Length: 120
Image (cartoon, rainbow, N blue to C red; front, top):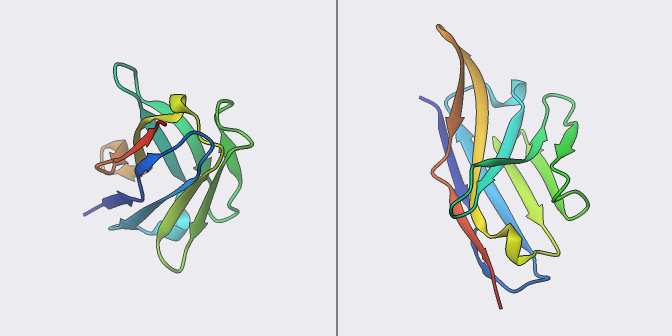
């Protein structure tokens, strides 16, 4: 059973930093690319960052490039999102995600999300 559990969200002032974590289980973590998405109130869910496996190549949305860093620890089955220079427009629920092949085709799995609020 695939499980993704995010943590680390909270309230931070503009210009501050947060580090999100996602603990994964139920699949061969070392073999799979992992992703972060976010969804702000009244908006669609949007891509934030991805990290491949096993080479850990990263890619970012233009809106977070240079401020956010995605990483993974294959010994802990976890990914992280270091968020620096946070802006009010970064306020959203952040989701960890993986796309896995099932018997009937590819399927996206999501965690429950963690709230990030950037406000003074």
